[in-house]
Image (cartoon, rainbow, N blue to C red):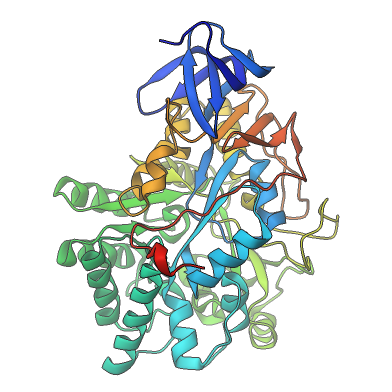
Length: 497
């Protein structure tokens, strides 16, 4: 109950409020004070500011567990897609202490956080790679000679020690890009999972293989993750099962479902696109391996130049000259009904969170706004969540609105909350929860982004982070940078800068 005399700093009035944890789906007023939700009421509330949001959906802000777009501009584009927390968990950062400190000092429009990057640790220790921002470091040293190779016991121990150090500096878990170093040892992967189990943190894995051809199928890659969960007790999270499963999603989903039934903690995520994006030097994009993905060179688009790769010789040339260049590749054909059904099954697999796998903007130096017409990125970086609601909910009707909200909010919060206490206050519209909120028009929310046009999502009226508008009336608020760091539970606060 709310006293009729109680006054709030801000009231969002008359929306259809969806709280995925309690099942609330009713018209309510939401009162906000001190950065938290202070009331959710069927009665009218009084506030210093009142914003009429009738005929709109009010939900927790979307939580993206998989965003490489960790710049102010990249996160502004995600805010315009309804995201209030974007975490770099697959690639991670190194050192995480510096990543957190620099982002905090610069300011971010939405909440942010990092895992400890296994691939980055290998680059640093095995190739003496220069430290830098996560994706820049990963891209710049993609062609380094040693980080993909098996390591001896001494070097594995060094990698594990460095990862554990990052956990104590606040990392949210361990990001394991083993698909980019498929020749690294299985024993090392198991040791990383054992470390995660001992520390009680998740791993976030890009699985070792992407193929429907034996040996080294997508199923084998997924079974390695499940085996690690069974053998160590670690929480193993599988990134973008839509693309890494390729056309084996039914077998992989069945294996994950059975593993969960046995009590193993294996979680999953997916994004609603049949194309992916990465660096052209990725191990699985070698010309001689493309057939294993059901691809040919022309499936690959160079984002910075707009070039479709003509043939294997040109692909080899590009991989040699600039292995860190961003590309987009079609891993299935969205115009083919069978392929589209495969994509939908990966998105509808039980308890699969929506996560964008947002990538940086190709060609942009620094944070500038608005984004220039000659700057490109994968459309998932701009419109993943709007596409989920516009396509899967409104157009196809294969997800209910409430279930889509759960997969974009509460589910990722629950996946992370054991390792990150702050997540217990996110993904919910309840008294005491953080006022990280999205307000959108369910009849209009849509993504218009393409590989050649960075178009922000439409139909998203307001986005609030800690009670502060970062998007108001569909416009980014350039003077608002209220994003807060999300730390892992092992962070030693007395040692932080």
